[in-house]
Each structure stands twice: as structure tokens, then as C-alpha cells.
Amino acid sequence: MPLANQVRLVLHTAAYWLILALRDAIPKTHPLAVAEFATLRLRLLKPGARVIETASRVRLAFAACPDASPIRHLATALAGP
Image 1 (tube, rainbow, N blue to C red):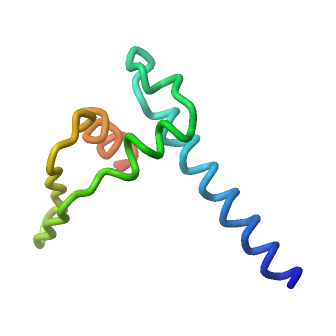
Image 2: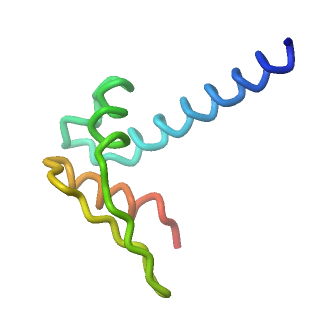
């Protein structure tokens, strides 16, 4: 059982660092830049989207997402060079 607890701790740590990186990538003028982690999870990670994958790009089609522009900004900011 101790191994399962260590794996769980590693997964929670990775999730924390992911949310922290997302919050750091949000422009400082946006209200989500100072939001709590639970708010970021609900507003940025949980909205449903249809993934359309082509040979050259991956497109996300959001049904009704009022926070689509910050998600677009985060995708380009975290994509790298």
C-alpha cells in the first residue's frame, strides 16, 4: 500500500504544477490570473470540447464556453516554439 500512496502523491504534485503553470501563463490583467485553483479547474479544464485532429493541427470546438479567449491564449503560450 505505501507505493500506491507515493504514486497518488506524485500525481497530485503533477496536477498542482500543471495548474500553477496555467495560472502563470494567464495575462495579469485577466480576472483568472488571481483565481483559486478550483476556479481554474472548473473554468479552463472541465469545459467540454470536440477535438478535430488534422495532419497539420489540432482544433478544439467548444460548445458554449465564455472563457474561450483565455483558453486560446493559454494554448499558444504553452505550445512553445
